[in-house]
Length: 294
Ligand SMILES: Nc1nc2c(ncn2[C@@H]2O[C@H](COP(=O)(O)OP(=O)(O)O)[C@@H](O)[C@H]2O)c(=O)[nH]1
Ligand SMILES: [Mg+2]
Picture 1: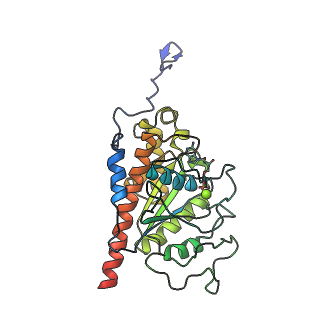
Picture 2: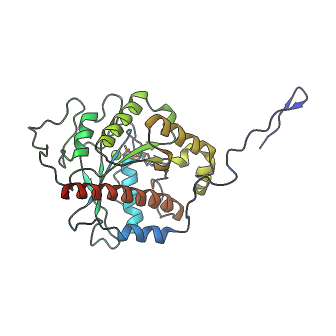
């Protein structure tokens, strides 16, 4: 690496290194089993309750890949039901679908579910109004989002009496690190709008910054560099400022996309965000439960 360049006989200032001396957030890279146990032990307070996690974000951000990754990590087995779209740019996820996560062994499911909403995009994504309906639990499984008009109350897919299981307990914004800087302003505006609506309902929110392997060469080389990379930290700070999501609720991950075997480093980051999602989402479930009893 050339740190010094001769310029008119004078040495130029050395380029600052792309990494910090110490990681700015700690990750237990060897704590996979502990993190997995935490996920496995999770049980909502009431028996038939489950925690509904709604993912939203631009098309191609890695929402489907994130669900796939969670399913793989939690089962300790690569998930072959590939939901991810390989030709990014189009809206692959068109129907509102609830995804279960199987327990290891495959004979039972975890008490948390995902919904992967069709990507936001400047002109043909899901309407913000529909996302708001989904947050409240008004959108039934199988509904095909229509970018031109919102789901109306008379529609067969409109759930007029959502149960505690139908409503969303945590909103997860998924954004791609590699193309973050070129995300359209109108998409950022939509993300803010959805976030504000969720805040009004008291729904907690986190953001997942995907594709960190593609956004920084140091991270691409070794995922353990994720909290050493100045570039990734800067991206997270910028997104935090733009979206209003605090830094401590933003988590970088690398999703499974081309790997054929599980990797402990990838799992550590995926399980870290999943455990935070479960804790925040469960707090909201309990808050709702207290309110309904008082
Ligand atoms: N390198 C890399 N590629 C990813 C990652 N996450 C997703 N991808 C790829 O990005 C593309 C879009 O992902 P997808 O999950 O379909 O995005 P969605 O539209 O938000 O559901 C796919 O080709 C994935 O394989 C990641 O963390 N790193
Ligand atoms: Mg998708």
